[in-house]
Length: 152
Image (cartoon, rainbow, N blue to C red; front, side, top):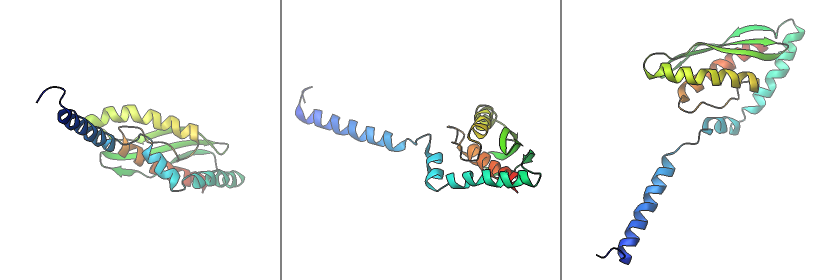
């Protein structure tokens, strides 16, 4: 066949289209876990945390340090400790996070972002960190556990 033969162009165009579609379908959006939790109605429970914290303040609670439950992930346990003052999250830190091998680097990159997001958002409705999906999910569960303890 010649270089500009119509059949050759059609075959190449079809192969390029199929390759492009396969690549697009194999990608996952970075905000997928956050979008899924928002669609599931995670925003109302986070909003409900503020009134719980408010009630706790009236009873002398709502301030202090609260440690969430340790959550086992595929790569190791994740546990979050919150500092709450005036019913607001003023600090967050992971007291346990996956370690060993590549997990050490992923944790070193992801945990500071998750800590900052928890303080900025003021609740557990935070986005997952790309490349640290399991750690992010465990962090969010432990964060919610700490928020529940702070509110109760």
